[in-house]
Image 1 (tube, one colour):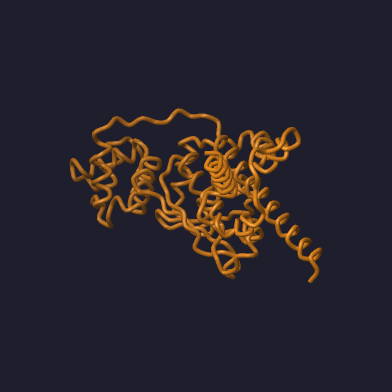
Image 2 (image 1 turned 60 degrees about the horizontal axis):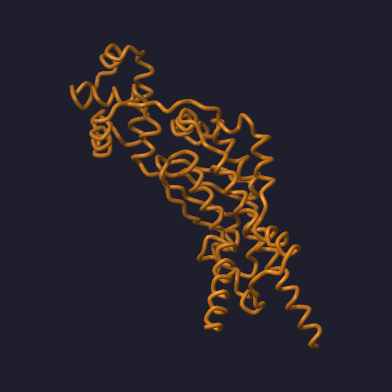
Length: 309
């Protein structure tokens, strides 16, 4: 191989790294814009959480919005494929993130997607959660799969309304488990009481005999000491999806911002190409390329200061 050929390969490698860097930081910027503009009303979150099987959940406006939102961000078609109590499984068949990490085979690399799912449920829906990538296209699994575990307490706070809490009060304080008596006392029909009892059992607050479980008693003891307050209603973000899509599309990646700066003035740091060759491997342990590059810049600035002292 000639010197010129070697230089060409190195240049192409560096260009590919920076291109991937640009794509990832653009996705990070889109995630930030999406989360900031996607606050979900409590009533819509409740509809989503009250779905007792996959089809019921998928038929809610929120489920469709999640799929549309993640596609607009650039994370692919995120599909909910399984729901079981406090656990949800999401799947992406053709993952754009994996295409950026072809040099890291047999590794799960979709942390940006996992973080985006977690942030949406925590910040947009108000549900404490943990997300783990359990399968990855990059690990030859055929698709990327993410397991979402919701924290029971915050889920129950968002799911149960005043009537549900009144049912728990009748059971806890008076030992009433008869559906007809509950319906008469709460002035609702028996079918509704039955539906609510099924929901309370589904989320393990009641056992098969309509007695409070440990989860149910702990939650009720906490809630019984505070007044029930319904969150004020506001328009869900999908009511103006076109504007949200435009906001996400208009975000500028960190790399693009660098280009704008360099057109006007020389950057105050130098980036050694040899130090960027392993950037994809190292970024898996960080939030993204932007954070990694920022740390490199700070390190370079510190080295310059040390040389001048």
